Length: 335
Image 1 (spheres, helix red, strand yellow):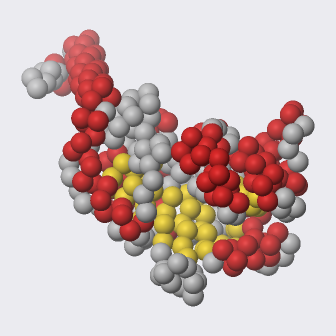
Image 2 (cartoon, helix red, strand yellow; image 1 turned 180 degrees about the vertical axis):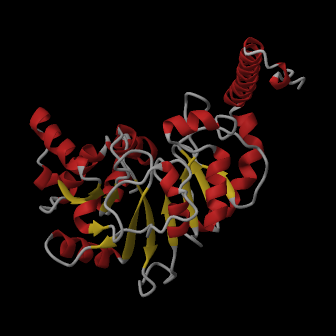
């Protein structure tokens, strides 16, 4: 499972019913957490408790997460006295089982995207001792390779590159590679680590035209997410995490055969991903109210940007006049 937000267990019951949910939870072996925002980790303990109730697994549900997650589990246990971290959650902290061969500090946005940056984007497994051995053993059982990549959303935010080992014996014996961005602004390190992946699941919190807001919030716009996918040479790009503050829909309606949005309760098999882009023209009809809201907000945002630019230009002209330098005075844009 990639992240586990508040309400995840309820969504399982709503979508699958009791029996199928319990069947799926019995088969759940690992949750990967990207960062410490509740919409990405707040449902872990609820799911872990239910898994333990169904399986009676004394080791607990394996969770790979940033180090602060351990403090959160401990605080939760103390407050509610309903979850033992050793009983329900088998926690692997990223920086305890992986290490950065170059630096242990979180990169800034500018450092992450500097063309000359010489940074290994993938954190490497530490020497096989203690929890590292247990983690390696788990991955071997699951026949998976998990590579964490630091991304500049918060100080402890991560993306994941997940692949099946070439000698794995999956359902059809094939090798695959999936990249999950978590929350992040455009990150060239993630693009490098996930090169030639079969599927990129990338956040697109902001619509195009909201680049300034995206920079402040350290998120990506739709266009930026697609650009990272192109840099990555991803075979398919699935856009997620649309901000309800702006719209519940992605801000594009141009057909591209390898790009599609994801929605709550969407179920799609890997082999059927190619079908998703063909539904795009119908979203504006199925979600007519939200589509109209998206367009209205986009228009209002453009008008606001235009007014701000005009106000800034007027201020510059006023300063030039006050300094007696009319040669630097510019006329407002007529567009």
